[in-house]
Image (tube, rainbow, N blue to C red; front, side, top):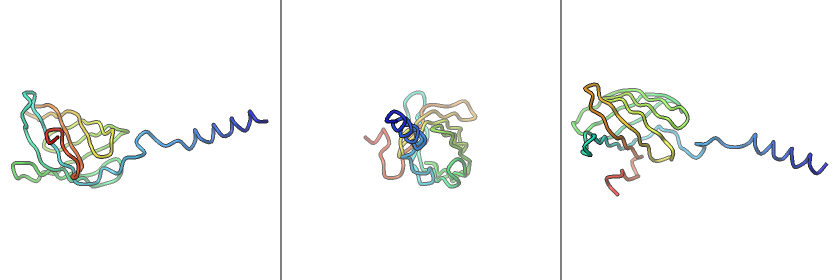
Length: 125
């Protein structure tokens, strides 16, 4: 009987387990980003303003050239894909930061970093 009670509690706890990214707030927010080229130079920087559901939506990119560009984003687990002036594939393992890679249509590419507006980019630390 005792064994059965322990087993039932274990199954109940497993069924109530939270997903891997349970702590994460929705992506919808203002994020600051930096695109670093393969030489370690900042290729572009600015902000992304995300809107939509928990898994996809629209993004407005305000880059350092003064352009406001529209695009889309999607999330699957901890993977984020952003289609704006460049294509970005990132990993979102903590609620306030993403990092990954980017690729422009002209073949340029490199590292991508983004943080919510209140957090610091790696180059600011």
